[in-house]
Length: 174
Image (cartoon, rainbow, N blue to C red):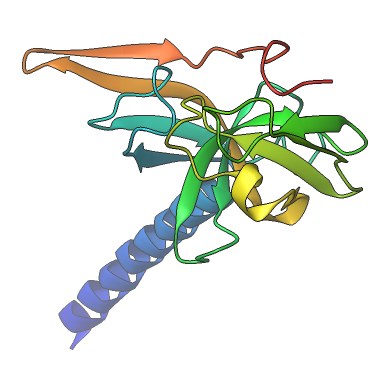
């Protein structure tokens, strides 16, 4: 009987350690740092069409430390089950001039980004579905800021790199 108590106590101790570790893992993934696999052509040439793994930190947007040029992970306003990776082009109060058809720049519209919103666009304007299609994005849909990508260069090597902050002063800015 005494031997079973020792075994039960040891099992409870180990289960407690595993439970604490899983809680720490969840908190870290949800509120501090996570990874995300990004596929598709909308962020070419910054991210590969075949897919990159990006590291996303979840503190900057909670502290209001985002700005134009930052690459962000957002919840899609059209399909809440999907996440998008886009670049912030304008913050609240900024004036944006855009065209739904990027091949015809003469047919453009202007608007001021409302309070509590940002304007996001993909780096590849020809294939990106972004704020030009669904309007300014509410700040609450931002899930984190992308700060590093991991690219599979070839079968034998992996490349790490910080994501550049592109300035879009020459595209759709006023």
